[in-house]
Length: 335
Image (cartoon, rainbow, N blue to C red; front, top):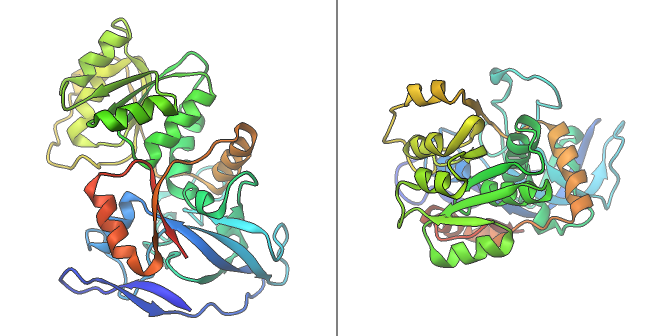
């Protein structure tokens, strides 16, 4: 079968199209014909060597496809079922220790930039019945992260005010989950065109942070000086100060990523204390979180926002498009 792999060597040509084996499933395993994958910020860090990976690693954490064979003892899956991968394969439910989260696909273990995969059945869940396999492939990292941050950790309620940053997958999923919960959503972007698309998706207010670099104050102005109850902090150290300013007293801030860079490391602790803020790190979520999210997606008929798709051999071009920041929503790989 075909498989994209990462060459651990300097230079731009780290990705190459190779081959791999996907043997018949053993006890407790299923064999899946992959039909789609999707890209996340982490995938680019792995592909460019920022995150170390084994030589020859198959990248991409998120995949969806069809079960073609189930091994002995497997229940809940049968040939023909549509399935989607799980990001943290060791985190089924409940509490998990950080040291147990090191073997996620596309990082510590082979991912889904390939035609077939034979894995333990618990490495997958059934895909939402209401989504195509391409749409389902967007869920394991970005969808579950937004669900965990906003619904599980944040317990978002009707009438809450939610701030989302930018137009990446996590932020757009959070916008959709927040609106489904009855929340008011404020979004930030640097593009007038993207602002219009955010409003079409349901955002109640959009702030262009290039026009208003002190966008935390703009959030306070919109909310009558109160601030927001939940913040999806995907920018990292370079946006956190504005998020703290925008937060309501007692607000929940989900610390998710650092897509805006790591250059600033100052933490305004006085503001955190004065506002009694709850800063909570998010590293995707459990298999149970994914199952709960999938039930919700089928119930509310949520449709993931997809920017565009690329063929499997064009993975390098897809990653360059991701890094450009020009997309709106998830970038998919068609397999």
